[in-house]
Image (cartoon, rainbow over all chains, first blue to last red; front, side, top):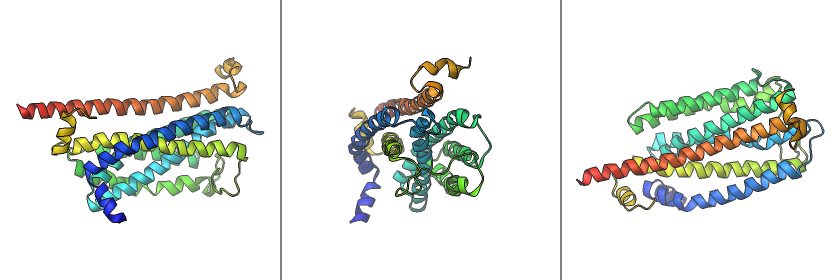
Length: 248
Length: 57
């Protein structure tokens, strides 16, 4: 049953139609949750007793850092599936995820630097957490340029997926960097949900923002994957009918 | 007076500059993603339409 469903979804046409239906289910929860999370985090949550108001940067810094790793994981796994079973749709999802993940990484690094200035007195230190996150950005950029370096989309998917899988080794390094090394960066906030290191009044809006960002990734990924599917399948009858029939 | 001090009249006082700057950067990066997505969508449709029109000739 499940396998049949996966096989069906691997058909570019079914994937395209399913994406069309799914997009509103990601877009509206994103808009609702991000408004709720922003109001909760910026207005309702009390100031931190140590960091004052500056901790509010957490509500975008943590979700984007979390997504920067999650999207990489998805990209590597889905890319690997596309590589092993030669599934076009999987290759498409991996490819269009990269610029989104790179953007989340950029946000995590930028907001981290802006937060670091008043808290640590510096925009940047070559500390384990920051350096491994910067390496993640470079991995994304290498993946994107490798994907664009080949004319044949199959070869491009093959080369870039291998890079993504090799780069997976960086994810545990980012995650455990705050434990393995002495770093300026504080420990994980979401490590143990039953025993949070943050007061619930501050934690709830953070969870809302993390979920909102996941929906945001869903929207952007599906929108881009749809167009990429059309390009790859441009010689199919259904794409021709769809494009000339003016239904976007 | 530093920029951070100048902007301390905004909500969040001494941290106003840092908070608004980080939220501003985040907004711009995400907005850019949506703009790029929409531009690419138009480009794909224009290119494909062109291709099919040429093939029909």
